[in-house]
Image 1: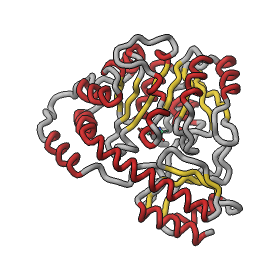
Image 2 (image 1 turned 180 degrees about the vertical axis):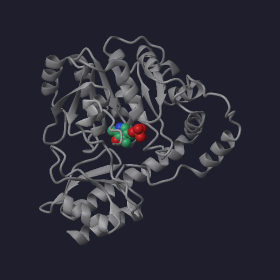
Image 3 (image 1 turned 135 degrees about the horizontal axis):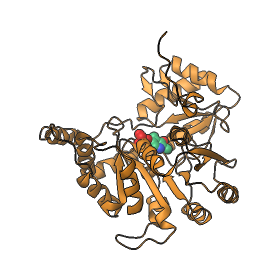
Length: 363
Ligand SMILES: *Cc1c(COP(=O)(O)O)cnc(C)c1O
């Protein structure tokens, strides 16, 4: 008989979390950027990679990359931790401060990976529920924080897959309700206005942290706005104590030299990134207007995707029809709280037109 791995219960009882990857002409299912990084970034990176001493381990502290990210956010390098994608950042964080007999609070519907990573690390998940407009109810958050005393409260803002931003006041409110860490996942942060980022709460360079600010952490990624999903690079901004905690839990040399280099070089192309973000947000607004014209229900989005419900048609059926037309979007129709909903990533204007035509046809 072949070997059957004795899976831990937390893993055995749950389906894995994977977005289906099909070969389609128009892939609008995982919120990637439709644009390649700038050509100059690619050539500059290739030439930097030809200088790497591949026989040596990478810089374990990712010194230069952290310096660049710190400069971009006007914080100190000691306040930055990097890993292979923001999901890995969160996993390392939970390895450090989560685990058996500790709890994490999430507000559903939200990014499924948050609770998935909690389970992977044996951290118990407490689920709150968003109101009809998919916002966190501060009163409910207070009760749950009081009752469960979580080590981490997750706030996804803009929230995936619903698109709304959580106000800085909500973040401050929750910081006042808990003694644990408040982790704001801003994977789509650059698509929204900078004044709405939880990073605005952080004291300026070098200033002392008061108690509640030292419990605030913000996660960002190169996967979306920086058009670098293939590289796997994400980071956390938090107190130096939190960064050291992450460093203890990370495996030695977890971030390869090519990945560090890619991030360092990307930071030199900030204005190109901002141009692409502007194009994507314009397309997003056009896409939403077109969806409204097709009389499907939509929700406002501050990210690069739109949640919608195709009226009286079954979400699953519409999703399949789109796949048959070689357009792949995300089927959220059987997720709790999102009955009948689908999520489309903003693509290039041609891709968005292909999606809209296929949708119109099947409606
Ligand atoms: C896409 C996404 C991420 C990105 O994860 P990476 O591991 O950095 O690719 C993180 N958080 C949310 C909410 C996302 O939607």
